[in-house]
Amino acid sequence: MTWKAIARFCAGTKHKKRNIGCQDYAAWELLKDRAIAGVVSDGAGCAKYAAQGAEIAVKTAISSIKRSFEQLNPVLVDTNTLVPYCNQPLLFVSKLCRWFFSLFGYKQTNQVSFLGEISDSQTREIFNLALEQVRLSLQQQALKRQCSIDEFACTLLAFIATPSWIAAMQIGDGFIVVRQPNNNYQLLFQPQKGEFINEVAVFVTSDHVKNEMKVQTFPGKHKFICVSTDGLELVSIRFRDFQPYQPFFQPFEEYMETIDDPEQETDIEDFLNSEQVNRRTNDDKTLLLCFYDG
Amino acid sequence: MGLKQVGLLDQEQRCPVILVLDRSASMAWATRTGKIPIEELNKGLAVFKKAVQEDEILAMRVDVAIVTFGPVELCQNFVTIDRFTPPQLQASDVTPMGEAIEFAIDLAEKQKAFYREQVIPYYQPLIFMITDGQPGYGYKEGGQEAALEKALLVSQRLKSLDSGKGSKPKLTFFSIGVQGANMSILRQITPAKRPGETMDRVQKLNGLNFTELFQWIAQSVGQAARLGTQARFTPTSALSSNN
Image 1: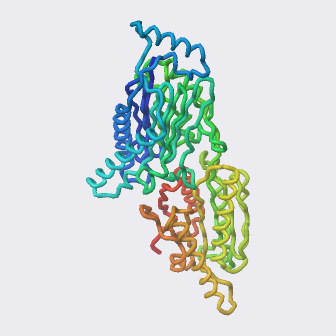
Image 2 (image 1 turned 180 degrees about the horizontal axis):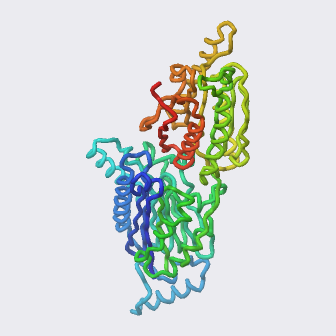
Image 3 (image 1 turned 45 degrees about the vertical axis):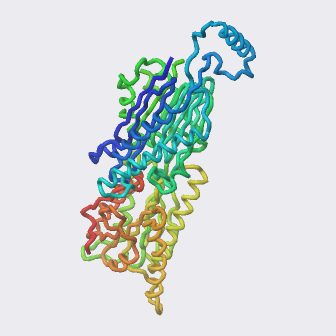
């Protein structure tokens, strides 16, 4: 009963033609208490060290998020009582009974350490810190190479998900799409774009990035999470109303459900490098997919 | 394997292109080789259509419009390339270059407003001006000076839109000088290349090689319709920048 995840990023045809590598980067990590963190970044095409920027941003952000998360105090709860009691009066009674029996030494077997809730201010704190550390790392690199931090400009999308909530942040374009059981796919934030299709409104290196950063916590069990950069935006998100295109996401969710250890497979990069995708986009392409098996 | 069934959304994205074409009287004067510029230009427009259609992605994304001068006229409002019929231009009048550029800039703004209204993502507009002369209102008193003054005034706006000083670039503008064009005035009017660009925005057409010119335009639009602001414009043998 845990998370399955995979991160893949592939150079687009425009970069292959010019012998430039991929300027996207993505990573995920399992955290304690059945939580998972994922980060994706797209190095700005105009930045000299775009690829390095994206990689540093992802690695710094994920370790910062991990550290912050470990410091949060999880509460011990019964796995059966994650549903609000008000809707489940019987559960409340059963919980009460168990508590009563536990007073006499009966042990509960299905109790796990679990982070039940997170406040918006905690979420903001975690991501603010991650952003600060990313900017610091990029600033250090810029000093080392004696250039402006703008030469490391990149977007940043990150999330922490537990079986009962997902906290997410976004700077720039790209998308985080999630799905709760019995629900449609949901886009967490609108991509932050400039006027033109390939223009990004804000990067982690921008001056007022802290005000521009989007942060939010979404309660509920999210079984499926997909994070990506702008390379796949046009084929997966309907711009007219910013609705995720179900025929795009559903096969990925089904795939994640059936495959035991997706990181061992090559299917995702085969898809990203496929002719059908390259016909539609020449940009770098990234998929970070998570599926909660439980 | 399930991933073969991944559905890819089909969404429009548009790349607006405006050709600003000089059809002043001098375009009808035969050169030493006996060729007539306006006729070569007309042939070039057909080449342009063909070149764009040969590029699958470009053919899907381009909206083309034609502004002619003088007088300044919207010869062709924005159309997709399959609905574009290359016009047969006739040389006629004077060279109100400033007004033509101004018209093209406004046309681009209008088209962008239309895209926004329709929620269609779009690329930066491209404007290519082709001329064989210099700004002029004909032989009336002070016509040359007034036309130049207007062109220089418009060029202020053009340059700030192209360089994106204070904000981001809003359009890309190229001037192509045909034989007889006043290159030094074109250089005054035309925006400078942006940092990192290799190709000057003022180019001189060698001979009357409109075929290659329009192939180059199609290729440049192809860059812009794929890479947007990161498009790299590459020189062609038909054009030179040091004349």
